[in-house]
Image (cartoon, rainbow, N blue to C red):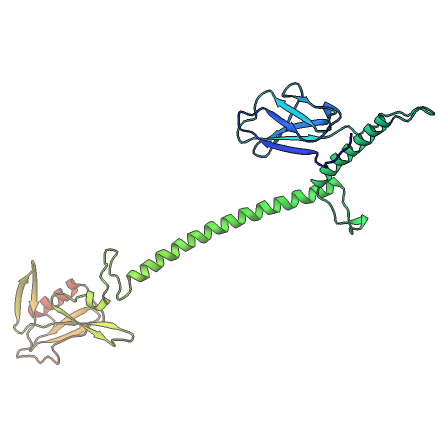
Length: 297
């Protein structure tokens, strides 16, 4: 027998129905063929007689393997040749040269070499130029690989955490951008305010006060002015009793509150508006005004 192919391994995808699979390379003994099932990573070795039966040992064209149960869909059946590394041919001195026996021995050695070559082809190898002192034993090499794997896993977890944080920050930035877009053209007075207008146009001074925008277009501020009545006396408005100060009376703003100067004759008022720099409670101003009208100063 000659070996015209270097193939020593093949694989098939299970479909839950097919149970007979070709072995497309020659093998000397049935035990030289190994079989395993692969699904989602782990390999499950199969045993002859328990999981499969084999035919074709010694045939130059190979043989076939029959599974007792068809491989399930999604599994992979792997068949490979792994002969025992032995030499069982014994030459007798001065006997006739046994050509067939010699050829069978050479075939077995070639099959062993092919099996080793297939195994080496799955190994991680140092470059040929690597100095001997730089080649580490398997334990040290695996330790280095495990350390690199652990470091890669930590880096992956950190990258995932950073991506999550970046996504959160992007969401916050989008929210801020939406708020800024909503505020274009004006300021919000409350959470329910959606009108894009300037703050000065939204605030009103109310009854009895007048507002003036100071330094528009720069460091703006609002000036609130008291509107004085033309006739003295009392008035009832909105359920509140308020004093009306005549235009001829004088008002003075001091730390205790708002005071009215009332004399025996008509008093002169320097201005018909008062700039309130410090707003005192209305009760304080009312008490001072009432006290003044009753004749006590």
